Length: 162
Image (cartoon, rainbow, N blue to C red; front, side, top):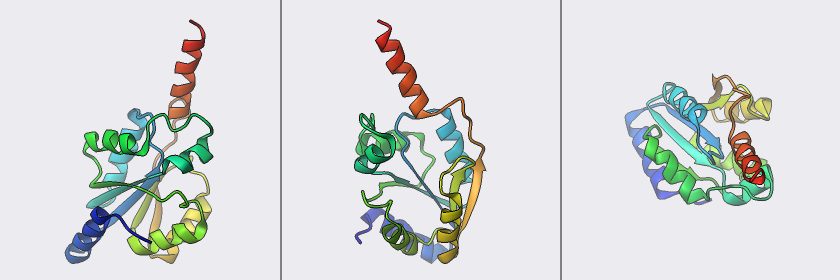
């Protein structure tokens, strides 16, 4: 497993400064205010916040054809503009496999995995984090009125009405 150089550097800094680290993972395709508020809440958990973006291949599997709207590089740049996370990196396409995910979690050893109240596989995530000495923290309640998928659907519906 090859960790991005920037991630290795952050982990080295963390080790020497004994700082706590929060990990967030997700798609972050079409950004909206709920994303920003979620990341701001996650940042309050620890000194270091890192965001693992799902790869384009994995997003397509999770969200279906036509997704992501923005490729991984653009999604990374969009999140970086907010200046909330200390590091944003793209996860490997096989991150959905338990063994791959465990290897990444073992390498990162986050103190916290920040999630929303609507996160899938919450029990599995809690178990995986406990094995590396971390905790899952729900930092934001899910707002069913706002999601990237709903925004995309709304735009597509408006286009079809023309």
